[in-house]
Image 1 (cartoon, rainbow, N blue to C red):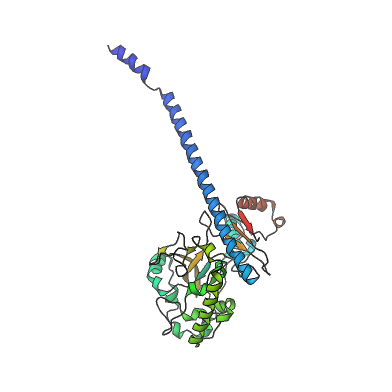
Image 2 (image 1 turned 90 degrees about the vertical axis):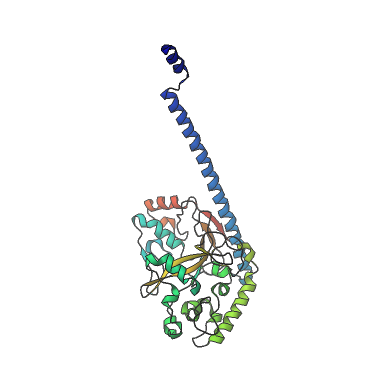
Length: 352
């Protein structure tokens, strides 16, 4: 009886070899499905990137139609990757050497010399959130650093760097985003500090509202006039940006933002903090409004004087790129091979 049972079981049981074959087949099927989904995901991100880029280009074309030039974004970093640095802080920026593993960072930093993002101070309303989020990094809020705004001399405000006028600062109404100082005091929880508008940095890029200290009424009227003009002009191309902005822009339209910010406000706007500008070694955080590609990275923009052409691009899935204004023949053979690998998946658009 026992022999018959063993013979019966031996005919129906899987051998170890058969089990291994089944497992290998299942592994191959899983890998194939995973590869298929990965390809679909990458294709979706590429399509999303191209769609957002086209929307940005439509807005840029609208700006050109109104002003006869493409957005004249100032340089905020050294555009030479061999000597890359940014301009955060009044004492100069951080240097990134062109060596070893730092090359990718240096190239990205230089390529973002003309940023897409618009960065600016936030109202006191967000101080508690900022203190909680960045406490471990020993970063104070911009309002704490400048909390005695009424007593700060105009000479000090001249040197304050608290804005980054990237591409979006030309395509969005910047005064509407930043706000207008309050009428009755130098500091209000929901409005910006007046002194930021007295800075040389603001005046250099906003000559119509470059008003000296002590002229509160004149400053407010100038800012109101600039806001009205910006709102009227931006309305021509603003629909192209609806739904593709990341960061802080709830005062423009409730539906203009897509996800990715750090905190939600009562109007449904998401907020993104960016950067660490410094005053006497004290770092501060700014609000940021930007447009990201399908992989969550900022787009890149470049236009040289007299701003009659431009290039806009995504660094692709690897997030690496290289400044297109650097002659490739100036690179060593090793660097050329490295750069070619970085840029092979870039998605590029030009003036049209």
